[in-house]
Image 1 (spheres, rainbow, N blue to C red):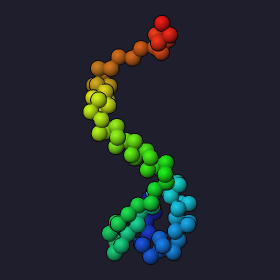
Image 2 (cartoon, helix red, strand yellow):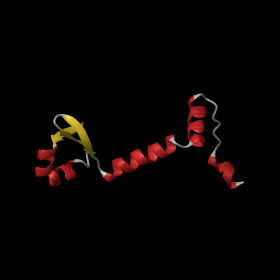
Image 3 (cartoon, rainbow, N blue to C red):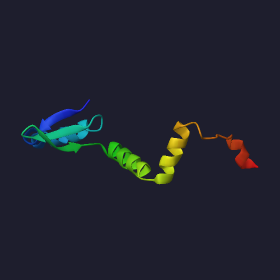
Length: 81
């Protein structure tokens, strides 16, 4: 669940918002318009990693192949041979 704060309230409560952003993103607004987000480092890293995967044509092809049932899986034991 995302919480929303005006810039003024966010500035006044910044330390508490940083702690709260570990669990949920915080939305920052000015005049009821979204101007920013406060995210935990883990959430931001996950977003960046997802964007990198989506930008990789080979990864996207592998995902589409899997979704279309064109992926073959093999047991890891074949790596021992």
